[in-house]
Length: 281
Ligand SMILES: NC(=O)c1ccc[n+]([C@@H]2O[C@H](COP(=O)([O-])OP(=O)(O)OC[C@H]3O[C@@H](n4cnc5c(N)ncnc54)[C@H](O)[C@@H]3O)[C@@H](O)[C@H]2O)c1
Image (cartoon, rainbow, N blue to C red):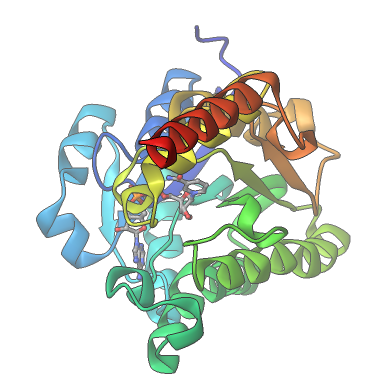
């Protein structure tokens, strides 16, 4: 349902790879709400993925860029301001990648060069994005910048590996930069901590199927999906949230306040019964 919540606003969406990507859903929703946008992803993702189809559908300029490169980010902001005809009102950082996860290195056996890449791509790119935008004065007063995070930043999730450290850093950057950008330019910076979601990056997480089911059973409202995350992003990019900044906003169906749900207890009891049956045989 469109309400023109972003009418007249200009945005940049980083990280739409295919129609499962959270950023893909966000791009569709913000345009539905009246925004005009540019899209960005790595040159490789642009070649291999289907971002060009989204760009055509949304009439958005697609700007290939490695978000860990300051030079590339300067290009994204310069080209976006030019293509959209003015300063930017909102930015989505929907970027995550861990070579340690890809190579199935366990957390107590990670490769440190790979850890550097994880942190650089998944977290420090957010700092670079903000620093570039601020130096270029590319974001409007009360502009809104959102990065997507995950609860493993605060609490240990087995299998999430060095991405947990990247998310902790990402959330810290939102607070540290949020103060400076807020005081100087009234720009607000937040992270949205999203439920586990079925996407290409999500599929890389060890035990994703079990994690999705566990998290869904534990959440009174169930897991939040990508489309619901897009709705939340619209709210955060709109003028209805002008005084929200430096927050890690939990978009998780209530998961983070739970310790044990009835559904989870029932499932656990069932699995104990199966184990006992196997032992008796
Ligand atoms: N899927 C989940 O369960 C889940 C849950 C919480 C948070 N998140 C976060 O949401 C964000 C989006 O992930 P997704 O689940 O939509 O998966 P996705 O794989 O669709 O998106 C990840 C994107 O990061 C891009 N990327 C990787 N390296 C890059 C680089 N150097 N420069 C620019 N872009 C780069 C990829 O091309 C891809 O488009 C990530 O930050 C992820 O950690 C995902």
